[in-house]
Image (cartoon, rainbow, N blue to C red; front, side):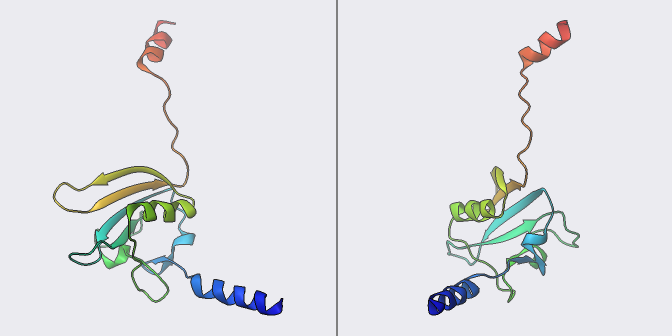
Length: 133
């Protein structure tokens, strides 16, 4: 039993690593909204690197190393699909709000929210009814 616990602990220790953006742990970011841009890791590659903008102060715009999602060793995290990206951020507590694509490049963008945005459920008919009263 002790060996099983030790083996499980070692397995978890080797698979868990902190994700960071410019040396800031992703788990410590308190921003309610983030913008994620997925860029191809290399030419002729299907793997994607992520650049995360959570409102941090920076002298540049993404894609810049200041926005790159990395591990503890400052190695860029690589994703294989858009679904993997949305699943990853869902596990961190973010809901996908919107996806977008840049017109002249293969860059794909994702907007996430930690809280669900309030939907305006009133319609034009409701507005007209309220004005008549």
